[in-house]
Image 1 (tube, rainbow, N blue to C red):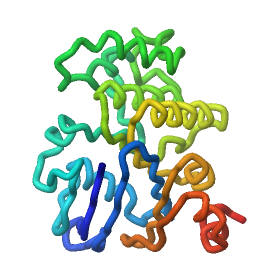
Image 2 (image 1 turned 180 degrees about the vertical axis):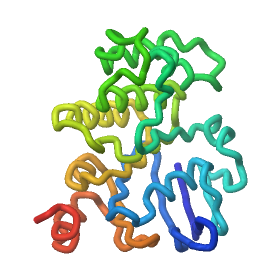
Image 3 (image 1 turned 90 degrees about the vertical axis):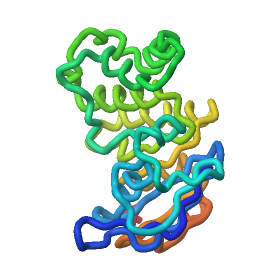
Amino acid sequence: MLEVRGLRSSYGRIEVIHGVDLDVGTGEIVALIGANGAGKTTLLRAISGVQPISAGEIRLEGAAITRDAAHRRVAGGIVQVPEGRQVFKPLSVEDNLRLGAYRRRKSPEADVERIYAMFPILKEKRLQPAGGLSGGQQQMLAIGRAIMGDPKLLLLDEPSMGLAPVIVGQIFEVIRTLKAEGVTILLVEQNAGAALAIADRAYVMETGRMAMSGIASVLAADENVRRAYLGI
């Protein structure tokens, strides 16, 4: 599904992604873990087209998209749930969801109801401003808005950040459901244990480079990973 080769990206003169390679197969959940500042969010932003790159190549389903603008990548099936949710706070919950489908030609009605079935609290609050939702509810809304874009590849950036454990459980259950429905997912997550438990494969990123990669369960058992990221 996704191939990244030799990717480099900078903020001004400071390079923060140093020749990264990454693959995500169709139907997989691939986790990307690492310490704060490792470059995980920058990598997701480069894949979605909102962060400039200085070298490398990105392919989606075999087609080069390296030079495509972000909106063209969305049209091609790459949809990102950004860190911090970034919902449109003055707009209603339902308007936020419908904005997620702005590039689609078919009616979004069925998918709006699908999101409400996943997150019933959003239906209850559908006419309220998104800014009045709790952090967990805003995260549900951000994920729902992304699903409205009918993604082939869903980029999730820290979906559990700052959430209560019960909400985290709901979010990860939805991620499992999306995989079962055939959505391919690249997951950046500080909760490394939860990410490795749900993923098929994983990468460990350190200071802008890939330090390790492999089957998620194997990495979860690795002593270095357990000590550095799982607190064991």
